[in-house]
Length: 217
Image (cartoon, rainbow, N blue to C red):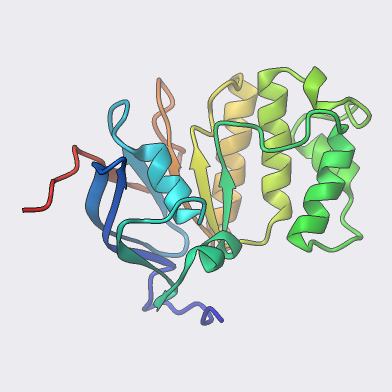
């Protein structure tokens, strides 16, 4: 059981976190912390391990060394998965299901209240009128918007957003910024990667730069 939040304890903390692929170091060791109401921007060149780091924090990959704490308690991959909401490069929903069916499925997985207005959730991300459209017929930007709607159904305090601005127009970028601002204002925290002209959301942001991993001595 993850303890209740405390102003003195970071929501997320990593100590000596390392990951290797085929015995080749990808990142680490990393030490960082993220408190409620804070955004952390992960920087680094191609292949620096930004996506891999987010997948480790989401419980999708196992770290090779170090530990991750949620609200002061060392947690395993299962607790990481339940304590975070992850938006990755791939849409993460079923191509043959409609947008509304995808949200119904996501709501069931997240254990969200059944009375939530899913049609309004689609409208909130700019997908009004697409309720009966299969996800495979959506554009890349519309699929990203559907992913953002699914993200909002989860009650996880930690958002892990991998290139959340990718494939979005200016209205979509503004939508991401509003969602991040609202999540931080509600006591959540966000760890994200970005590229291009839209380097960070319009909120106070700290940065974590990934460099080439150090081989053990």
